[in-house]
Length: 215
Image 1 (cartoon, rainbow, N blue to C red):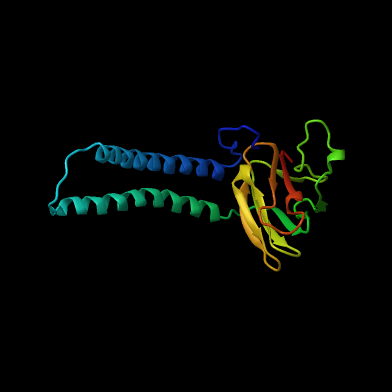
Image 2: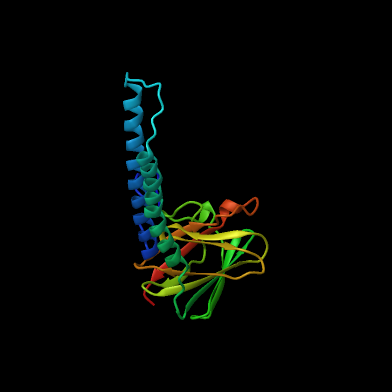
């Protein structure tokens, strides 16, 4: 989970989030290279005293500055398309977590264990030492780790969004519609998220807490 003053990215708890971080570094490398090259040209032009009033045709240069950007975009697009494919890939798993958004709490159904419960944010007066303000709930969604989990997201009233940043998952909760995504938590722990779609006055008071452990 992100903390105050953190400089690095959040610790990844799923393979898909690790892939996102790799793509971030990949794209950042490209952007730094472009920025450095453009900055070099800008400085060179700014301090160059030579001028030319004649227009010279440079067919080769035009070809180069057309092909090179196309190759750079391709270098960026191919990993992006691969990542999009991995995010949409669904695994055949018997572990299902159904999450329904309400104003302003979440309800969960776990068919593999027969559990069905509501999850409300804990008020500050009920927090224990070490608990996170505005992030703790009275009932956590408990799922097994190192197993594919099909998360089904819907809403009972308005638009919500079920988000778990460390797992790299985010899905809109739409009334009358079931949206499905795959989640794989590769280590045990407690993972926090929040509703990521403005849904009313108490939008910021409907946290998401998933506990991954061996079942």
